[in-house]
Length: 287
Image (cartoon, rainbow, N blue to C red; front, side, top):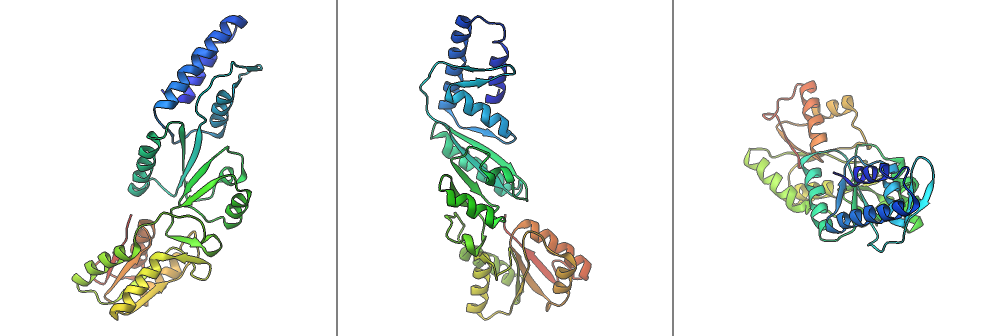
């Protein structure tokens, strides 16, 4: 049973109690919840802001019910550290990341993880409505919103994206070694007979820093291979433009896509352009 359900179950039992009975049951319930929180992290994929606020009320010694606010006895327990994980989708990479953060959180009692998934920015996350201590995010499209939140200096943010707006380039980030990644992918394509390379990536290079694009470009230049790049603006790809770009590429060619979602769009564009996959165009990505 999750903490939200535990709270609801206990709170529903208090209606009609005498003040003395209420104080005893309140202390027992919060002590039980405290023990649950101290043993492990809570992963709440769909917990709402209201549920987070109810947990905050329980932790501060005040409980809200349908009729009134009743102060509770003061109980000493570790303060919850609320950390949001903001992901683009539920891909294998995303699930592994959540499991990794969960393992870390289990070693640090009092962590509560709020997992939010979707391709668009979430106003709640940037507006300050949620009482958070930190955000781990792979989505940084709303540059103004992130800059505004960071300027408050209250919430720590760690980025996960391989591409980021130049205005946010100083944000702490965790990344893979893109040079090693590109070296492995290029070796695979060369073994398949491809000697021309292209990159379909994560953002407009005039406003974004794309380290994966830089790694592909560096590999092609250092080995003397022809290189092409599709330039786009986040968050979406314009399929007719992508189709024309693929139709105009020399063949055969190997294309590295920024992530698997873009790779699927590249394959669709190849079909529209009449380019055979993988004979004429080999599409490779990473999760």
